[in-house]
Amino acid sequence: MVIDDVSFEYCDKCVGIWLDITCLDSTDSSVSTHDETARSVPRAGIAAELAKVARQLVERQNRFQAFFDNVPLEVGIKDTEGRYLLINKYTEEIYGRSNDEVRGKYPQDVFDEGDSELMLAAQEKALVTGKMATTEVRDNQGRWYLATYFPIRDGRGKVTSLGSMGIDVSKRRKAELKLERLNEELESKVEQRTKALREAQEELLRQTRLAMVGQLTATVSHELRNPMATMRTSVFLINELIDHGNEKVERALGRLERSLQRCDSIIDELLDFARTKQAVLEPLDLDEWLGRLLDEYEPDENVELQIRLNAGDVNVAADRERLRRAVINIVDNAYHALLKQRPTDDPHPEPRVTASTRLMEDRAVIEVMDNGVGMDEETLENCFEPLFSTKGFGTGLGLPASKQILEQHNGGIEIFSEPGAGTTVTLWLPYPVQV
Image 1 (cartoon, rainbow, N blue to C red):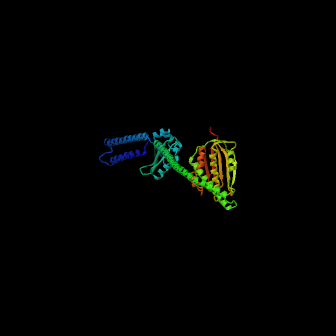
Image 2: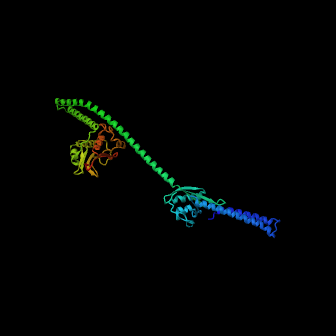
Image 3: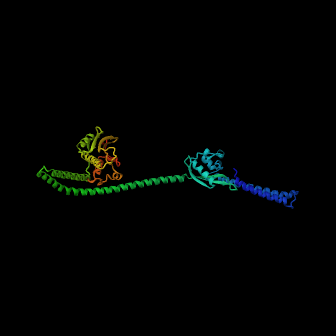
């Protein structure tokens, strides 16, 4: 290999010495041109000096060649078009290509260099700006390299070629990737723990509220049952004593009886939710049971009730009375939703509640759908919270109680709703029954 810049340095020195001696030989009158002995002295000195310079040049070239070949970096020299002029032995060993194979060729023609677009962009930047350009690339063997490109100039400052060095940073990259994965795992674990902590806190608040409900329920049931019994007795006696031809009095007594029934229902709901009795499961023909239940239900005369029983001859394990309460809660909510103001552009102006059954893979489903005003996002998020209610009456325990009952059946409840698009509540029970 010939390193031109180093060679030129020593050739310039040799020429300077030759000129000095030649000038001295031609101008010094004390040296006779016919005197061979006198002439041989400076010529012998020139030869010795030239031999010395040549030896120094070869030594320096050998040292540079040894450094170039043995440096543990990918080192190469390219022309200004990006074609290889020279690569070191380390590069030859890494890629299995010799200098003769790569000389005069573009990197992408001889090497499978992976991110070649990044490398070419860095080369172009170094040539255009005349400054060093660096990029990090990965070859198709999975190795990561920090590639540096820099212009090589001649004695006049003109860029004559392009130097390149590649440092293997695979270990560092692997460490960085591992650190990234560990950070992601840590963030995920922190997020999971935070979520679990938040859920635990919410559950604690819920249990606190439930405990308060239980305490209030015991007090309310005791304090209200006795006066309500007195009121019932009084209504009965008044009914016996009044003239039944007075419609105003009869309507007033009817309202009073219905109000007492409503108070009884609220107390029962509070007690049922606070006691959380264990469900007593027994085989239940779902379609037959639901059909009978809804036939006995007394809907508002202005609301259409559609019943679609599609589960077939299916038996589920259920507590009849508790499941009845859950279904009635959901149907009542659907009817109440239809009492709200409906949008004027509703494509289904007729208020309608649809109750249906069906099988879905490993579950039997009861679905109650209304075409009411639907729920907004805030209501949907809080609808299972005890005591939360958007109605002007009731306890806010209907949906939480229904959820509790379904969970006691190893089932669940799901709600889909959009403002103006109605609400669909899905109650599901395990099927087939696990013995």
